[in-house]
Length: 390
Image 1: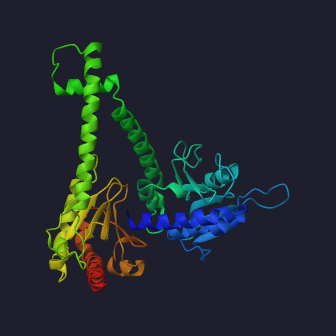
Image 2: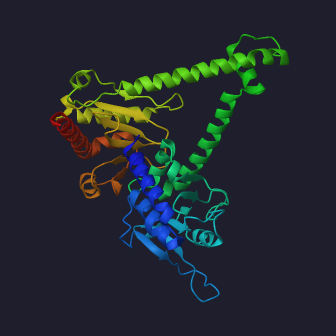
Image 3: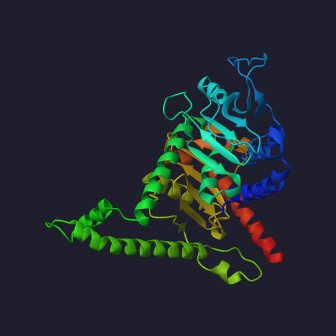
């Protein structure tokens, strides 16, 4: 479980306790929705970042003379980039409202709109027609039943991670990934005739022979058993790889700490590490090797569908994340934004994110990469010492 997922799990417990006592939309905002926005890293007390009751110049007035408003507009550099419309906790969300659509359609700078009742969060964008809010959502979560995969997607909308310019591409990726996963899941649970025919054709066993319906019926159960055996083997390997992850030294963990550390953690056969990610990893390793802390701080890495993580001590203590599968390549560190700005002069910087054109640009970010690495390495040493003294 990632640190962000763990934080959302704690928020879910808070929501679960408060939910029976929440009545009405205003109470829902205060007790459930604002804590959620805060968990995403937004400063809910700064109206220049999270503006309540956002009214635009084009807002239509209701029959009683008041202009329509969106409950919250999250801003970046003075521009709204996320609209959040709130409903009472006991309200059914249904589809998005015309009010939210009008605001979205008239604000090209804002790529994502969220409809929520404090438990469900439904994300919309303009996938069908530019600047026109789509009828269907591209992502939805229930905070009380949040999976780790959903938390990984949601992390892309945190203050340090959200990239408005890539939001629509990210929405498309989420939709296509879900559709492909559903299709593959259905095929693996119950192989279709077309899939069975494809597998038999790839094996070459029936080359030059006709694959008849009788052959399909005969081999479908065999293919299904082979799939189940493969999935079981993959799950077993995944569990073993996680158990082999290096553990920090504690009162009874000296032997585990002394064991050789793995250099990577695989997340599944569908993840393809690109040549650019490999090049970036080697460049970063080469830079970090010159640190005085390098000898006792093993560098690990893990590739995922959304980012490539480079860590120290344990796979979860990351200090660099590569985002090379988006329109604009970038890296994200855990260094404070003001320090990133000082250490990445000449680059486009957004918070703790630095935009680059190619892995070779990392050579010009040597100071930032060393700082991020050494901060993570020292944190790992501190945690190990605290555990040993416990």
